[in-house]
View 1 (cartoon, rainbow, N blue to C red):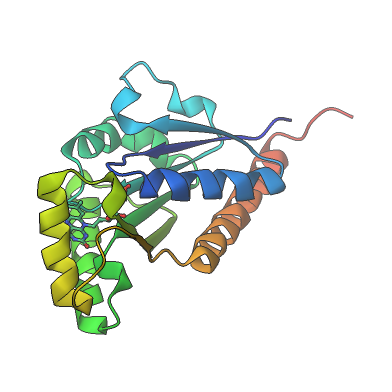
View 2 (view 1 turned 60 degrees about the vertical axis):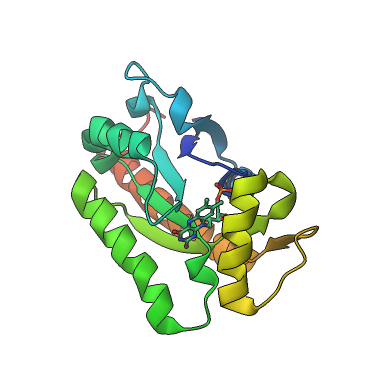
Length: 194
Ligand SMILES: Cc1cc2nc3c(=O)[nH]c(=O)nc-3n(C[C@H](O)[C@H](O)[C@H](O)COP(=O)(O)O)c2cc1C
């Protein structure tokens, strides 16, 4: 039986998409077929029930996640609760060494999930990137001043990536083990004919 998963994501500068691509590649190794969809392009006639599991990834911008992803999750909440589902957050704060600062992201995640009333099977928070080459003038100024506060003066002709790919792989392994359990339970309920 074909195993198909959905990854729905939002991205402004591409790091969440890069993480979604990496997750899809890892899931291919487990023989899953993966459909990646940009949250903005998903409409209400999208059939999430057709999938065996779903992953939703969102980046933090100005202290919050995109509103359209909130709407999307609320719309598909019942379907999400009937399958293994996972949530991942992407932010610069997750790259902070200070545990107290990283707690801010946990609060943003908790507020978001409680607001949309979704209880994903697996939740993860990944550090993102600061790709100065992709920013326009205003974003460059904002991010330069944020980076100055974090790490001091930075070279804005460079791109900075903080994602810990090992923890992304661990997230995939964790999610895959939930998928395997759900699949085994489904096969027990509906044994296939010999
Ligand atoms: C305008 C702007 C605002 C941001 N605001 C925050 C923020 O409030 N908290 C945070 O932790 N990271 C913030 N970031 C960092 C992003 O979360 C990080 O760059 C992430 O990799 C973006 O993912 P994306 O490329 O998929 O959009 C901000 C980035 C930009 C460009």
